[in-house]
Length: 352
Image 1 (tube, rainbow, N blue to C red):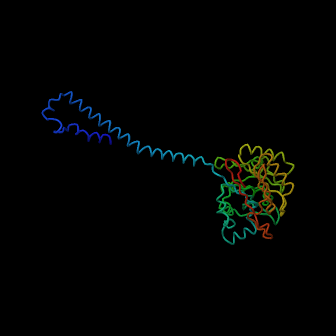
Image 2: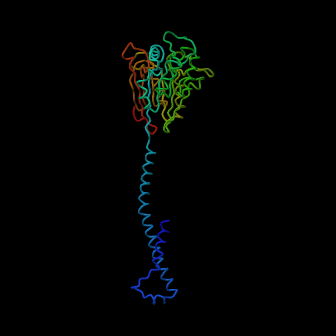
Image 3: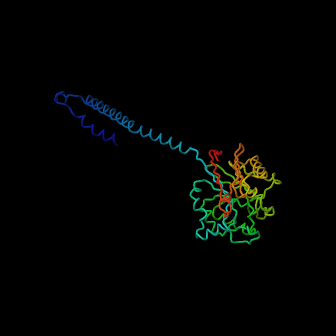
């Protein structure tokens, strides 16, 4: 449109003749051919000038814009290809009955145990813990005074605390019979919290749970060596994944199978001796057997106190993370817990 306007404005100049340079009478003697040639030359000159100016203007204004666009495109590509770091949090035992429940009801807030920590936990891409009390209103107490079962409403606290995966393999899984156990599995599922270490049959109990974050597949297995082997899941019956030193072949098989699907594999063990600050020989054997088979991270619990963190060329072992939410107020050690933080980049553990 701009070029057309420029051409239109130059048309009158073709007909302008200066009286000082050309005699008017003489100019009438110009042949029609001469006149046409003169007009063509003038029009050609102006058209060439206009095209040149237009191209120059286009280049002057458009090229810098393209250059800027190219820079933006490169920067956006670099940002898109920047590898994001993944943060995992692991906590220990979570018990929402007894003394904990007393304070929940006293404060009239099902989120009460997690009010001071939920904001920090939200910073993680994934949060894992051990559910020490079943969450149900079904079943009956078949254990002892140390049997735990929390009301269904306590699930609100777990959701509020941003838990993604919970182990259900521990010595309190069947405190209120298999009915409370299976009811807990269903309630976790309804609230979009994955469970591991138990299931409605043996295959589910021994299968890994996979969580994919930023194209990295993180797998989880869970076992208990505390409780009763009678609670093991059967071929068609609900139960937990039991583990002891006589089942190394089962552990290795599970780990190898799970590692085929996962970039990073976590194995959770409910093992060890209560209130002991050093891992037992059995703990060390089970943990290292899992690492040798392909696991990357061992998350341990049950002793109710924090035990050493071990990092070697094979992986990370947290033998016991202690109590996360519990009511054992009788010692400083049982009132202290640890959160294991693991950072992953490009499908590799970079720090813990």
